[in-house]
Amino acid sequence: METAIVLVFVIGYLAITLEHSLKIDKLIPALVMMAAAWALISLGLDSFPDWFDSVDHSLVEGFSSLPVENLENPTQSKLHFMEETLLHHLGKTAEILVFLLGAMTIVEIIDYFDGFSTIKSYVKTRKKIKILWIFSILAFLLSAIIDNLTATIVLISILQKIVKDRDMRLYYAGLIIIAANAGGAWSPIGDVTTTMLWIGNKVTTGHLFVYLFLPAVVCMAVPTLIASFLPVFKGDLVSDDAILEEKPKSRFGATMLFLGLGAIVFVPIFKTITHLPPYVGMMLSLGVVAIFAELYSSSKFSITSTDSLESDAHAHHSPVHASLAKIELPSILFFLGILMAVAALESLGILFEFASSLQTTMPMLGTELRHAGVSDLVILLLGVASAVIDNVPLVAASLGMFSEGTDNELWHFVAYSAGTGGSMLIIGSAAGVVAMGMEKIDFFWYLKNISWLALIGFLAGAITFMFTRTII
Image (cartoon, rainbow, N blue to C red):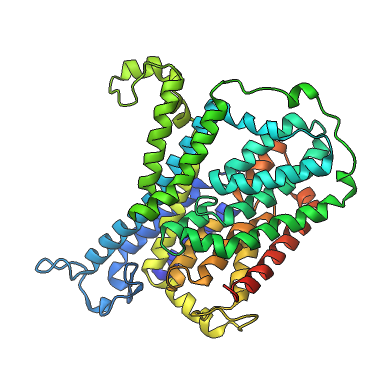
């Protein structure tokens, strides 16, 4: 039965990876894979010799000798362990999804007021190199606050208004992808995978910044610096002054931009002060931003209204409802499917056993990870793999494979590799995929012109991490 479950996972994984070739949204195989894996576990529960306790991060002693059901002592049964484990993983997954829903809604509220147009005021030059550095730095900083996917969408939208030459714009978009992924790696709210590690208590905000900020800067700056010497970035842009001087459509745009960004940045502070899960702070931030959004929209609509007719009549006046309607629910369902599918493999002890075999068979290359029997090579390969396949399941798998404690440098290296490695291919990250859709970037064009820059940046940042961790 274990073989069948692994086969289901592999087939589902391949379908996710080949999403563009199969013309099937990746959420579909993710959901089918999740349901099929847990159904097979339930049907074959009596045949499994081991069960992994995610709370204690160890195998359950004597699991093979337990009955499937125990009416006299229900807690001492295989069915009880399966139900408890399923509930545990659903709870942990829900924490991530609710957090992402809150962050996405705040970003959409900012966009509702055209707040991101304020960023155009920073672009006062026509020199190609200066614009390159402005957008790279903005992508790096913005992705750390509103996540790399959203930062890419915002900046490419602005880029389309400033740079009219599409061939020129593709190069800018490529560097934005690299910078956005680098910026998302050092912030707990900058990338889905980093958020997973943060919510899973594998990394803390302070240590994440200390360990990864400098490597992330190097990962962004080195490719940008090299690109500055390319012929394509020489000279000035032919740009329309009217576009550069265009003002936001709403007079509350700048206010909502800074309020929304401030609210998102407040979440890690709230977690540090209260020790509550991050999604609680995100809901508080969303509530505050929603209050101002409703006030500024001059709407009589009540967020808590239960009158469906009133809701239908006034929904288009409510920035909150308008923002909720624009949220990427397919992404949320994809995360649900993939995280719960990986949880199925973890529960059977498959990932735990795989990690144990890695620790004994992989050669120890480079500086040895303190407190861990995993080589730097394994983590670097994880980064390379994230360029080919989705980094969310890779990080989810690492959570089940390794038992190192909070802020162990292994987790910081995982955050860096999974977050920045995806830049090496256009399909390797959410930022790359969305840029590919917005600008119709060809896979092989990116491979030829941008991938080598991303690889240099990835390796330069990794070397920086290996150096800085020895002096921290």
